[in-house]
Length: 271
Image 1 (cartoon, rainbow, N blue to C red):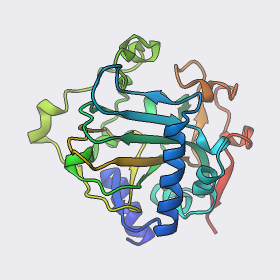
Image 2 (cartoon, rainbow, N blue to C red; image 1 turned 90 degrees about the vertical axis):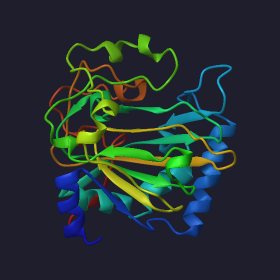
Image 3 (spheres, helix red, strand yellow; image 1 turned 180 degrees about the vertical axis):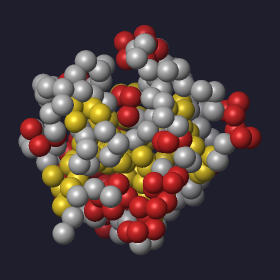
């Protein structure tokens, strides 16, 4: 996919697949990094499966700040350039990274949601490059994307991924509309899922509605790495319930991410 065709598809659909973003060496490197994080979870790690629930749905975030391999995924791959071309940005900031791993026999689904309402920021240039470390399809938890939903004009209330997470303040935020019942609307929506090989990526907009089923397979892992990027128009927004690591930025409403280059460095600039 050329930069121009990526930008057109991203603007229209909010989502595009790019094959072969990572080579075999990168796949092996990030597979080992994810397994290392799962074996010794960091302080921001989350077990989305409840005690006694079958399988394991694991998440962690902001690994780039403590692990050289995750940092290299931002600084040494072409993911930032891909995000910049998709968004039509003149520069791309690192926002943060996130692991989502569903082990075989994990029924817990990823709820329908947008990413943007979890974040203390405004703007349209938020892009995720979602990297497959394992082969992924509908049987082991492939993500579904509602094409065009980034243009619906609504920001929906964040959804809990974890059992019991409904009690979190951000999930009751009255500033956001209730998310629509996507499953009840399936026949009227353009819902897409991409079969992915290790090293493939799905690039999608921060306001795109997406979700995933469980990993119904008996022996196939689903390890993924989401690299989050922000473009030119992104500004901070105080008072939004969000992750502690983002709150720690202590920025003022309206400030650009350039105010904290230690947390949100520029990774790519358009020539």
